[in-house]
Image (cartoon, rainbow, N blue to C red; front, top):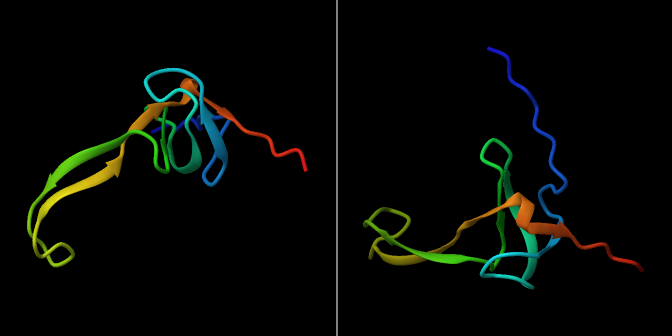
Length: 82
């Protein structure tokens, strides 16, 4: 099986800004890059609520907030000019 490496303009732990969509102007650190789907997860941006079952990690269960994916074309790298 040939696996082609997909190149992206951002990587994990980069500081990025959302330039398009509902979260325009939001800034945060990249938590994960999903190059196959063309998405990124950004800390504190596009929080979604998800119902969670009871487990050892979450004995009470309930609703948890997670970062949702944003298309990689909607973010730009923020350069620190220090």
